[in-house]
Figure 1: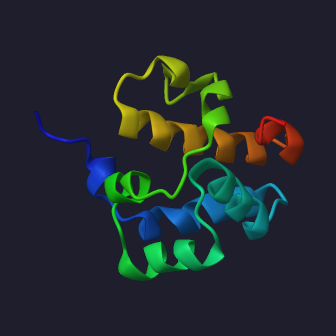
Figure 2: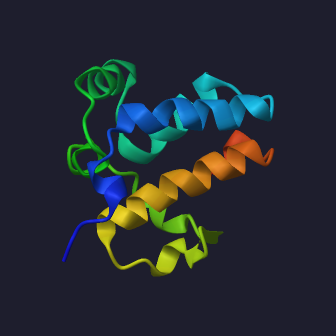
Length: 116
């Protein structure tokens, strides 16, 4: 079976779109980064390496230093799918990130977004 296109897209090509989506709603790049750090365990330096090397989404999540154990608390619908019901692990991780960025753009507090 052919992998979904998102798997082979570079994270660096989508990252500016996450920032743009947040900034349109008066949120910041720092908040987008905080979400990415919380979900994946990347830090500023390792995220910059990912962006510089144009690593694809599949590798981005496979090499994530530490997926947050609270990621399973992320629920809801994104792109017509309930994130908690997605069986493909990588696709679920992609959708987790999409969902968190959506929540940021919708004005939720960082405390709620980061499931504290």
